[in-house]
Length: 338
Length: 258
Image (cartoon, rainbow over all chains, first blue to last red; front, side):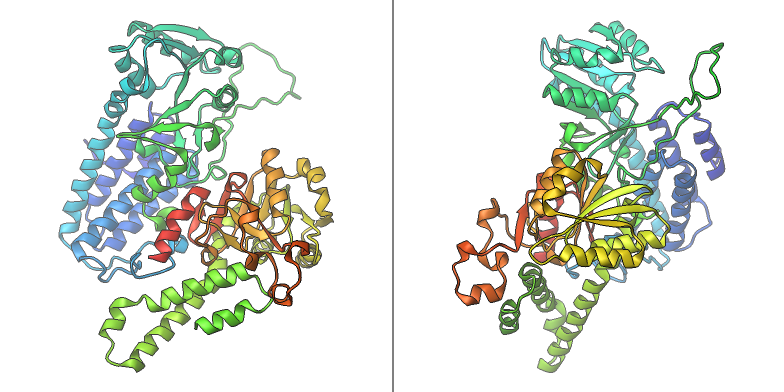
């Protein structure tokens, strides 16, 4: 594949050339592989700065695209870990290790100084990035494999719109279980329609309903399973429009809400920071509106952590209150201020 | 040093934060295992302890700045914030937000018995924040107009609950009932290793001032100075260790004490 430049990547993101979050994650990893493989850096700190610049420019132009930023932060952690391993523990790294310092300082804003030139660093980082790529590719199958344990026979499951992960999750479970799925059509994209079609093709009994029918039907539902765009740092999710009302209805009837999400969607950002962006209106052609009517279309909905029961990730289910721990394993705390 | 701690506890200060701060201080300065083992004699040991002590105090003073870094984005234009009593952390955040040019207004509870809410209001007016003092009893009335609640804390318990000026429990519970977010701005040296089951399990040394305890009066008739707020009513804790959900406190406490 040809070398990908940062500008090409940002343009592709802006013009929505990527279908799925997985594609975005893979491309951003590829971009970083190009950066790591290039000759523009000598020390660990140079590399960290290059990576940080990528993250900052993506975040500045498209703050709602969290997946590329997450991958940047993941690679930053990989670089710092590999540097520490090659240098030996507790030696020369400015960031104080936990055993020595009492007051851990994650909000110090500065990446640790990795000033020594280590020739093996490049190879080790590239290997680790390749492992990360493999993890992303396998994430869909690993999540789908958990379907059998989460779904029982004769259950009624509700979902909303189209999510390839949820589709894989349900179709894999359908091979061993017999259950019923209710799909909300999810206006204005109406991607509930292709989802229902795909589920029918897989042999699952499906019912398509309008978004407004979600609340009355919820009393007959056993579980709600949805996908998401981002998992924010307090354990909530930022996802398709309609999720907030779906989650509130589920909470009202005490129906568990499961979110299928691979680890690259976990973001260090808080729920306040990812801005909602109104895209252009989707009014059908030919409709005439007087100029005094404003149309707005929000891009994302926020579901607070109290309404989510559990996240189904690559290898296990985790509770929203545990998300902060997952974040500390995935990312380095100083990379919060990208 | 233990004598100094006892002396401090006899003074009328916020016992919670002083005792947790001093305990962490003692642990920090004595836990420099590697350096102490390599030290040649007592004089250099003392040097090491002194240096670590200075570092700890410097960290404590820096911690408010770190809290500011993460919490100034909380206050947005047009927000109406409710705060309780006089918290220097909350005051610092609001001062910083005014410096950054944000427009917001504040309701401050009067916070009897010492009227500390009025001091807070005066300080806020001096900075240029429009604020109104309300009665402690008016919190339920005002809650529907408020966008967010910001509190300080004298202590953070292991389960994420906070110990703060009397009346905080009311504010947080009502806010939770009305689905308003409650943000607590607190430094990490105020984390304490205690999980109170409810308000009646708070120790007497926290509840009453030292002078009252020494006076020997009947404690049943004395008004408590602090109360305990359950973590369910709190949304997020803004600390110098980062923005923590209430479930993260126990993990950081283990890190601080080992």
